[in-house]
Picture 1: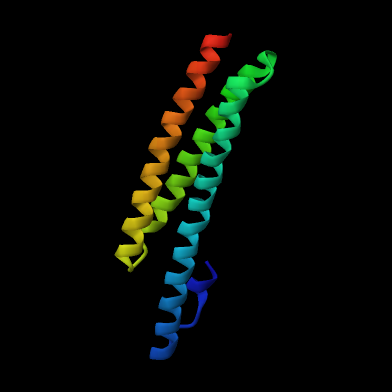
Picture 2 (picture 1 turned 90 degrees about the vertical axis):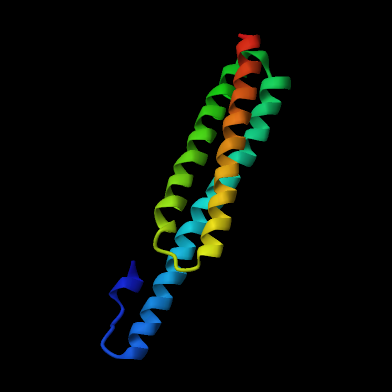
Length: 121
């Protein structure tokens, strides 16, 4: 947001501001993408918990899967909202493709975990 407040009186200031906005926007896409990745990766723990954990806490693995999937999808929305402001469409398209893949994988992993939980409760 600071980049939008940069001066833009001279041509050099306009160029610098534009570049700063693009860098900030890239960052605003990369950070939530990392949240997506970490959230998805956390589902591996929930899967193992559902398979091999304490039977009395199997529902916790299911709740964790629901929360992790929500985190993946929520962070994905943040990636997408910032995509429209980026000039570098190659970067945008690559990151959006990876984000969509993570969303689908998270949904599949959530279903896998919830099926195990349902069998055990």
